[in-house]
Image: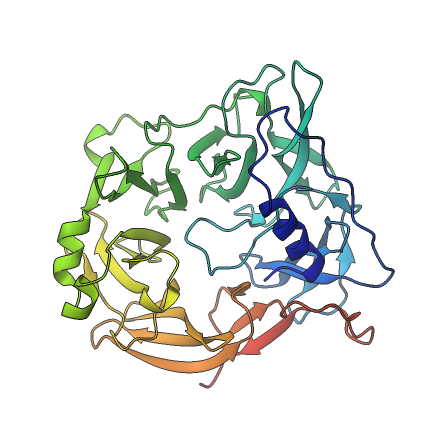
Length: 411
């Protein structure tokens, strides 16, 4: 899901213990052979007319691009820049935590993206984290969305995974630490400076997968996210879904609305699954267009994607149930196609089948196969844009981009 050189950077960083603040110098850049790149992280605009993506090069630099819906006429929007020199940029859906992503504003005028942000500690050492910025397409202006204050003492050095609220008034994103701790942040776009963004209270520092409810009215809607409760290493974790309403005093609709313990989930697994260690993990949250149901993944093993299941639950937190088949394939990254069907990915050898899940029948139908899980469905669900697998060979210069499109119409 990452170009080879970026993957190499992540592997090299993983050979040593995670850097402590001020303990290591910023790693030197890698050589960048001319003409070697891979396009990653494609995201459709809401109107389906354009695709934003990042062009990644071996020196760990990323460059924001924009192309037409057929991937023609790719246009570089910004200069290439090293975003995460000691972490790999990971936009693929085959993850148990929220992927790195670009984010279109609801009116398709802005694109939110990550940019490097350097921390200098008292001993003179450095750490490169990330802040969030936006590009205003009509004007070409680049402005900050979320930055760390000058005197920063929290552990969340990496701001990533931005998600705009449906009315554009709020930006939800994750703050992540060097040891994987994560917390939810919400930035009111008006009335708060980028350096003033505060994290939502999280006693466990284990939150991700933010998803905005499409509101029935013109309000900001609610935000649902996953939070793991870890009390002690000896006690299995408990998975929860929580809802908040930014800018609202409607306390009755906020708070936890789904809780899944290891014991309760184990009872729903087949006998063979119950015999294995069960550590439940929620993820891949996706609201139905009418906001009445939430699709998500649930698995007894976050690292085994052939054990992932797709579930749905009502907006009230009632009636949680599995809708994907238990056929040994695994299903993740759900997306709503219509009221009775979900799209999803399913591991298949080195690639991933694109499937539709019949919610009532709990059956899956294969529509095609992708070589990676770094992909995005078009708004009308007739196409999927995806990145190609890793390659050390220069791309075909006759193609405008290394991205590809799988057509699903008529299948």
